[in-house]
Amino acid sequence: MYKYPEIAQYYKDFLLENGQEWAEEHKEDIHHIAFNEDYYIIGTHRAKEWLADKVFDVIEIIREYEDDNFGQVGTDFSDPEKVVNMYVYIVGEQVVNDIPFEDVFATV
Image 1 (cartoon, rainbow, N blue to C red):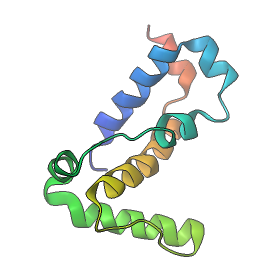
Image 2: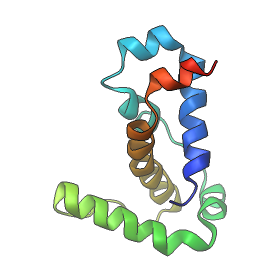
Image 3: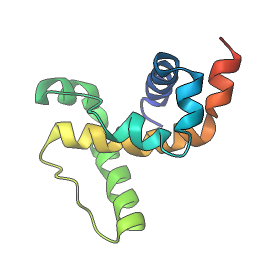
Image 4: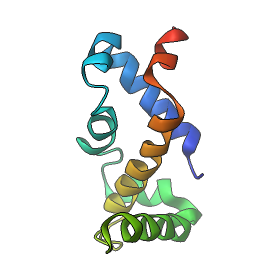
């Protein structure tokens, strides 16, 4: 999955910044807080660079995800910033499922 290691590292850093006690208190909302309360990428130029030549692959992943989960597509594909941030939200869901927060603190 495109940029999975980068997004996984973002998640680990996010947890370490907030601490284990915080993670325990917010374990049900970690995905939402980490990947939906703030932008992962800010700026159209940065978003375009981040997407690089994978933009159409990323758009297809978003389209499938939104169609499967919401019955319609809501992301504005003309806005690179929105595309990146929705994609990171989707991959972030997988990251949170793959990497239990307890494992992040066990390696510290």
